[in-house]
Image 1 (cartoon, rainbow over the protein chains, first blue to last red):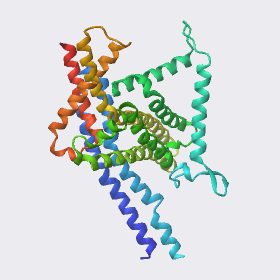
Image 2 (cartoon, rainbow over the protein chains, first blue to last red):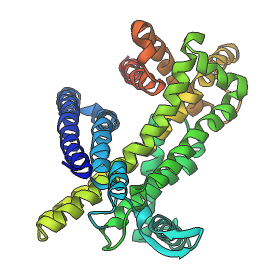
Image 3 (tube, each protein chain N blue to C red):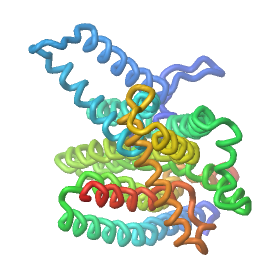
Length: 91
Length: 302
């Protein structure tokens, strides 16, 4: 295999693995947070506003790990720093 | 935005050699122009009478919402924070809203814009902290609960700034990206749903960004507030019911609440003593906030 093929193969496989594995954790965490928040709202409907606000902020923080993974896989596919170098070296 | 482009930075409108007029700049200017022109047109004819125009009602709802949220999160009067936090919210929300216009790309989908916004928050935290408790009082909060925590506090401050920037960038960028990819696969139907979803995400992110900025600023001001509340309480005990300065009632209440939040914060920290090393400042305030609410509710019930 040429260098470019190796770089492309590794990048695409890695980006797929990154987003696949990286989204499992935040998904589980967010589901748990959402379930807890729903039961809290069911128990104390008066506090729904406060709970919802905290939930949104918390979800955004949990989600940021998944966003980091998405970013890494996006960079690997669309803006791979090694791709241009390999192509330039090949030509 | 085409599928091959990662951010509006790469969309160059005009090139003067060293200075490039890229998409981020132009779309930022458009969002600014819409905000400024809209506010100017609406506030030109404000009325307090019976007939209130629809636009004025809309602005009142938006500003009232921001004031309420800021007051609930910070436990202080909103006037101090509204110019900064409100601007962040309005700008991010407006750039997300304008994305439904074809051809417009949200400037918040570029890391340079979100980095600049996060840098503003990074600077605003010490500014508000020093303004409220003086340089020494502010710097003291870095060595709480012990001087050993100094490096963790500093790292926490830096990493939360980076996280703030990347969170907003990732969310906005991925929204347009997924839309563009879907557009090349299934041109009819799904992209519309995705852009609707992106609109929702954009508003949630604007809300989250503003609330997090508020939480960070409030956490930098907390030490001072507690001392002030204690002093005020002592003063109150001395002078009986005759509150001196105006708005004593409301202010005292807030300070009281803040003090309770502080105590709860302390209690939470005492609980999680061992693992405090890994907990950044923001999480601590978060855990401190919830018990404070319960506390006050109990007091109200009594």
